[in-house]
Image (cartoon, rainbow, N blue to C red):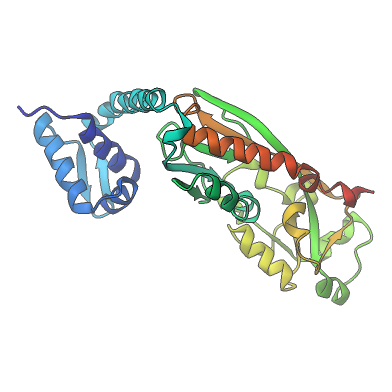
Length: 303
């Protein structure tokens, strides 16, 4: 019987986590034919079927499910060894993947990353802003920025900043509609917000904190789309100050009374926290958020 290698298990893990050959191939920077061939080779080496193939993709068999735990253990140990073996900054290169909320990734971090790119040209950064929690334990990302720290697992986490959100309307919208003088007046205005059954973290569920029973008239899973709708005068929208303050046409509504506070947490798995490429991005994010802290909090609107 042919022996399999750790390299074979990397292909197994990629397919198990994505369920698709093409998606696994992109993660591994190869093509789907190679991935399929490596899975076939691993199954032949084990004389066992690890996946059920169906029109929806690849589903783990019971044996495949049992292989996940030892394969992930080998993955963690390999990552740990690589971290210890390449512990100097001179060898800094490769890819580091960050999972983050769309607002932080698109409206804060993206415009600052060129500074880091100039200092470390060999380092590539992948920023994942999909509307779901990305697993650090399954190596879907090395770092994550969330509204809450992980509750379980071998992670290091740190609150990097708090930020405030206010209710905004476009100047044009507010001049065309009834004035808002007190909280109860908000109920007569259409709101813009997240799709209710797709809110993937409680911290994004703003409506119930604004008014009981309030439902957005326009719902989108993207804060970029919400911002665009607010700028176009669709209605009122709850937005972070650091995003809305860039647009002079957006006016805060009842800012002294109506505002929310949230936190951004930076988390990393213990096995990769000391990797130079991870440490560089971690330090950069913390440094940039510290220098921008007063703008995150929007205290100027509270006076």
